Image 1 (cartoon, one colour):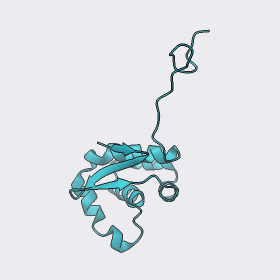
Image 2: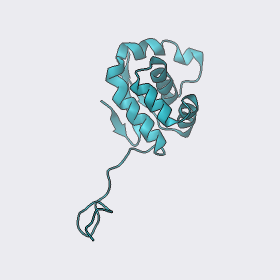
Image 3: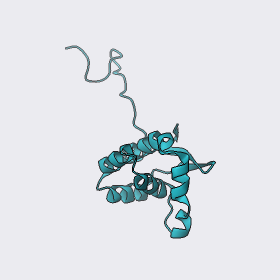
Image 4: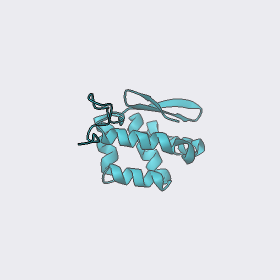
Length: 119
């Protein structure tokens, strides 16, 4: 399950907790890799191992071959089904300016969500 802290998502890889940071650099690289965030979400939904590795690589800020060594094996061993939800949440946060998606706020007048009040 995702752990959220100011837009960060924590996943477990190789028995170690790792935090994906929602930075502009990560957002830019992920968006470019998949021709937009929707493409990234579609590839995660399709259980594309390369998509998982790419999202995690950029979320962790890994840039060199030495830094990414063994990442594919750790992602595969973690089980794609176990990390699909936190990765999906992470990509959605990137598309929301690095912030968690929020519930609609209640209207002050009647406790109804804004735009749903009776006329």
